[in-house]
Length: 79
Image (cartoon, rainbow, N blue to C red; front, side, top):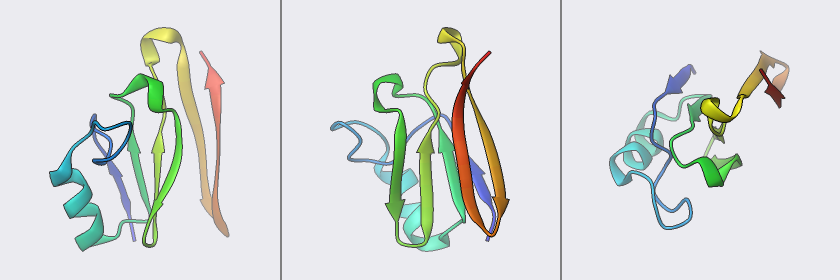
């Protein structure tokens, strides 16, 4: 369990991202992986037990509300 945050999304996100990040997620299986570097790839992907969420571009006022309890709930918000 746990939350991993990094700038890079997993490899395969619109043919971009990091293979190393994907390998770490596959090995460690954190509960959540948060990223935002590939701005066009906003959204959610599952990698095994991990929910990977690309928040989007903070410079465009995008942020994320994340609730971890009985499952994972999130929504994008404007700041």
